[in-house]
Amino acid sequence: MPGVAGIQFISEIKAVAPRLKILILTANVEPRTILAAMEAGASAYLTKDGDPEEIGAAIDAVRNGKTYLAQSIRFAITGAMGSSSSEPAPDILSPIPLTRRERQILALVAQGLTARDVATRLGISPLTARKHRENLMRKLNLHSSAELTAYAVRLGLPTT
Image (cartoon, rainbow, N blue to C red; front, side):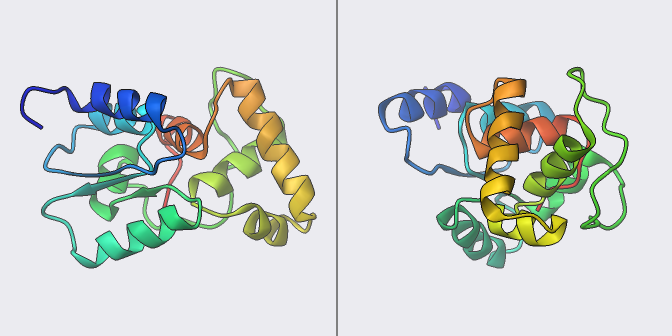
């Protein structure tokens, strides 16, 4: 975007239209930039050299209230973590102490699961899953699923 800093532009758009979903398509794969874009409010981050089918997957994910990171970016950020297991990471090194359930919720939300999916996976009601997510976001001072996903990425959790 010539003449405009991309991250700043995302923040400005979100300030004017907070419900707007922003999908980033870029050649930049620097982890710091990716995290900054997600924290600024981007809902999806795709690379120009990525699989064209990922664009559709990203649109579907965002339309369903999830965040999306391109497959190549996931590994660039989280390192060689192998397959992204659906099992929550038991030892998340967070600067803010998290309960076992909060760690589970964070890991599952980072994988793009909805409250209903989280509830099914953990054997709790969707309302309880939503409440756990809200409490986690309040505890971490985060305000969106994108921010929660960016936080999880910083901790090295696999995402979808």
